[in-house]
Image (cartoon, rainbow, N blue to C red):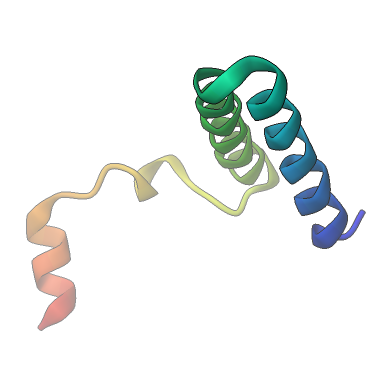
Length: 64
């Protein structure tokens, strides 16, 4: 499935949530969609748990 079709489905889901459930439902659907996206990237192997937990010293060493 192409990214355009996935984006279309996500946009339609957000539109229906906003229309039928109001702004609160829109935010809940958007938040859960973002969580699902990150979980999918994690399970596909595109993300590692260490990507979320970096120390400041490590980031400072990268800039040098």
